[in-house]
Amino acid sequence: MLNRRSLLKAGAAAGVLAAVPVGLVLGAQPRRAAAATTPFTVPLRVPRPLRPTRLADYDLYRLTSREADVAILPGTTSRVRTLGGALSPLIVARRGRPVIIEQANALDVPFSMHLHGGHVPAHSDGHPDNEVAPGRSRLFRYPNNQPASTMWVHDHSHHAHAENIYRGAAATYVLTDPAEDALPLPKGQYDVTLQLRDAKLEDDGTLVYDLHGFQDRPTFLVNGSPRPYFEVAARKYRFRLVNTSNERAFVLRLGEGDEFTHIATDGGLLPAPVPSRILQVWPAERQEIVVDFSKYPVGSKIVLSTMMTFPGEAPEVLRFDVVRTADDPSSVPATLRPVADLGTPAVERTFAMSFDPQRGQHLINGKPFDVNRVDFRPKLGVTEIWTIENKDVDFTIPHSLHPHLEHFQVVDRNGKPAGPNEAGLKDTITVMPGESARIKIKFTDYTGRFMFHCHLMGHLTMGMMGQMEMAR
Ligand SMILES: [Cu+2]
Image (cartoon, rainbow, N blue to C red; front, side, top):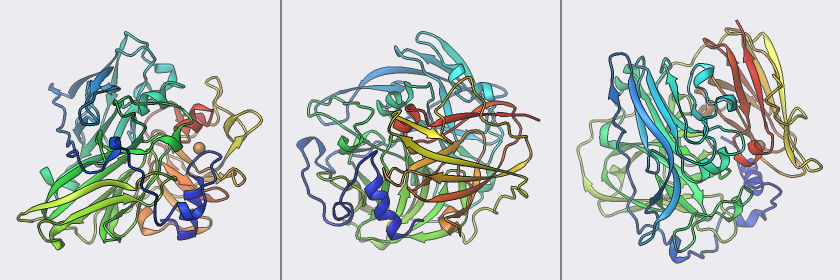
């Protein structure tokens, strides 16, 4: 986790070129909740897993990217883009059993489906070369030969992706495996996926998009519900948080800073649980926690809020209403998953992330994305160390790096070893202005071209992406 100073900087830095006075970032927030955003009037939508066609060797899903009119604000409908007609659909897959998704594109823009966190062949990774044109369809094959984790599916077509994600086309993809099943963590109805995002909604329900409007998206949606409430039993729950926002970071706290248990990140379970009171969820990241509601009397209402807001925004994200007691056979074991051995690094690379105001572009190592350029060629099976440097001190812009195909380990931040909250596998790392981080990564199994990029969608749209070609 970042320290308090970094948090303040993060708060000041959450928007491109935005300098938010520190006093407005943490502490008392001006409340100006419009009728549209009155918190806790709508119940949380809890998605049920989509039903695949079960074939002998794989599960088949048909997911159409299309517009739909859905109820978000009470009494209105909102025209959104979806994967399959609803917001926040959920796919639950099993390690060792492949999933094939037939993706049909009924939008009037290109769509290229990407399983974020997926260890998948190049042809199924959502490379811009594999865009599905409007009216066409394509098969995406996900082998699911990787440890259990919470992933998500979104568009990766270059230029349309930011708007497609913002307008709602994002699915949660939970991969389970026997090792995780064997742990006594909360299961079934007590294991809940929470897609978090910001949005700008007019009172009539209209969802307003602007690539650079991230400071003006004051409503928070959880699984497509605006600042909802969720009725829980007085026992432990596992929450899988996925930040699908284009650029919004959530710095979450529960109640007045109550303790919860951090158990997993992008690539699945941490080596050991980490008692925590603050949880950062940066764009595209997944963070999983266990909350034990048995310490609250029935009738308690506990608010999950974000400590990083812009002036005029309300901090509330979600309220847990403890409405009943329940048996609780679950527990959080002292060890969760062994640390992965990614080997000894043989290759070093540096990624300097910067905004170029002259060109109006976001660059990696001084270059914007060019689909005709391969930036480097990793060898499969060779361990690499990457240094990610955020050069945007003057503009105070955070950047992240998300390499496709493989998870990585965070080695250190600014020379200091990564903390216990980053001791598991990650696939997206955010680095504050003027800071640096080192990661260890080893690509395996699949040759071909894969992307690496910043996951702040405005930056990505404005060039902050490159491609690597894997070779044996
Ligand atoms: Cu960036």
